[in-house]
Length: 287
Image (cartoon, rainbow, N blue to C red; front, side, top):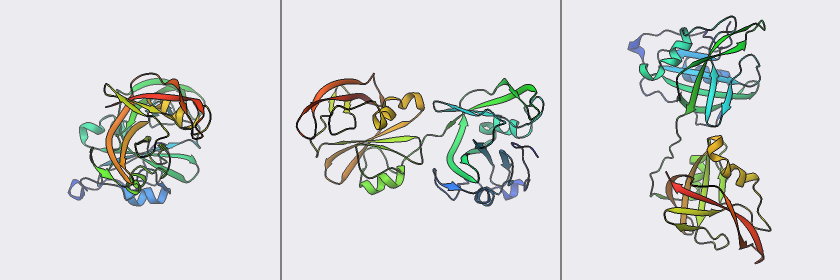
């Protein structure tokens, strides 16, 4: 059995095709192999699993197994194709992945950091042409493998830019906490940023279309660690920034996606005790 091969149920006719298939669990949900099998009606083993009735290809990124050298580089996953022994070919599931966009196949990624626990990462698409590199096979012999550069389909919240929503809606949509100005999602590669004009501690300011956003930390000098590090390295690590403004307590207006418009810099502002301290400023612009 090939670790990234196809096994199990497969091959229903196009008359039974399920169009616009959506899995019954949200991005970030941790599921079992049986949950995946039942939802996608695909094989129950292998790292690449295609089934015609749902027109989906399931990819398993399993960090508990060591044969395939799958790596994230920023927001791009360089995913090794199917085939444990000798040179890989661009056939079977490798061909399916290479031609997924042309054939209208949706590709779904699951990532495992411990055995039997698969986190649903969402849909992915090719971010470039498949290419070849050298890796050892199952018998430790050097061979050619196919690498597929993949990126997650951008997360789209269930509300439009300009919408005003309560904090509970934001937390449910992004899977983030309900407090703090910088909130990382536990289910998507997103960071929620809140600019709250009701509260006066942080002196965020707009200048020529750029929001100079003050980092996290209410007391003493701020460091470029924790949440501030996540924000500073958002481009490098592929985190999408979603920005909200608050003009009235409990009402959050969605401004859309923002990105760093320059390098973070430091300036002096008062902390929560009224004492001068150094803060980090992040220049951001709407995408």
